[in-house]
Length: 359
Image (cartoon, rainbow, N blue to C red):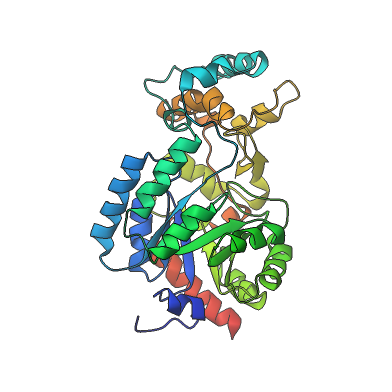
């Protein structure tokens, strides 16, 4: 690209970017806006069916033309082979099963009219294989794995010319991902939204950089300003991975009640909970996270059992706008999201601030 960014890196040039900024979002509009701004948009499609993935990738390619973008899947190990909802429900323990109706009653939540996001898509090994197949059959430039980087899928992606990226929370996981063939590593610290590990970003990034040798590393978790980008470069990263920064953009178009909560939140207003899926998930603190952290709450079940336990309830909460329980994943960097902006404005501000900080 022409008009190179003052914060450009070798990795950014190699991947055809103006800025070495990798933006994760579940919104196709955000992904397209990031591509148009010279960044790498990463579509989080882990809850999409193979057919929805195929259609979504075609839509993004139609809108961005030859610009690069990528897709991210979460591929946890230990899932059932098939995703029969009735079979999963039959195995749910009595205590958590009784806890869910109590939340319906306490907050006067109407029953849902359709399955929730977490119960409409049920994780299974077979489902993951079908998702991977849909990605590998596409012309997406980059394939990322949020949890797990299957060696066979990585090898197939590389043979098709796709760059493979793995998100890790420890140096040990980084080395395992490289052994499986990952070409770029995202060192995601404890500050991050959604699924996160136990090591803080500033402790994690240099350890992963040292462990990875010549394999480039992106810094993730708490990155929200140009100063964070400059600090990431000082720690040895060749780019940054941001997710929380896009949540309050106009393009993301989240529900207004969610946007209001996000804009008002500080770093201390986020909490890690397993209540949504059974996996750790950093989110803004609401009555939902408080209920599941209360002394009388049952322990969260393993994925995908927690998904099925609460999936329809979560769908009902958002369908019927039960404000006290409405929540969203967000990292500690949410403190820097204090006004609504366009994606292009966020990118411009990051580049300007980073260049100033590096000077």
